[in-house]
Length: 146
Image (cartoon, rainbow, N blue to C red; front, side, top):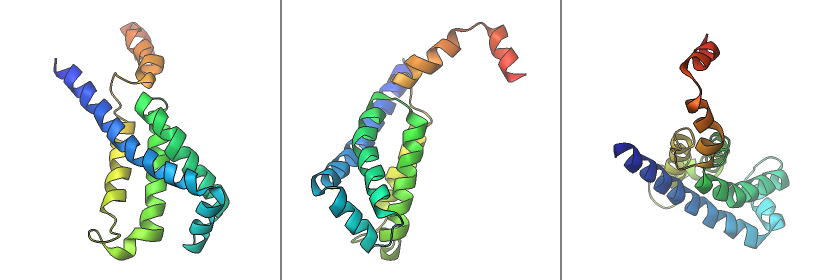
């Protein structure tokens, strides 16, 4: 029973993180790549158009994949890069808390990492990649680790 509760909690965590990223991605999508790239250029992010496309795709499409549990480690690392960029370029000067502080980007980036590498059994990654590995005989798994 504990495993089921854990899996549901991990799914709820992925949903919570993805909803926040998705909402911010939709804001950037609505503004457009040009406006987002202009904002990125203004705050000194290198390759602002490439960065804008990366962030919009990550925060919109990546959030859907994160909820579904597809390519979790990859999405988690991309989220962490996204939040590291936001922390360094925008929020660090404002301190941890208060107006413009970096507490949200810190929590989002680190939580995404934790959930990305511990997505639980209620994920496509588990169904597509891990379940087959767990079902193999013990002797086959020993050969892999040797």
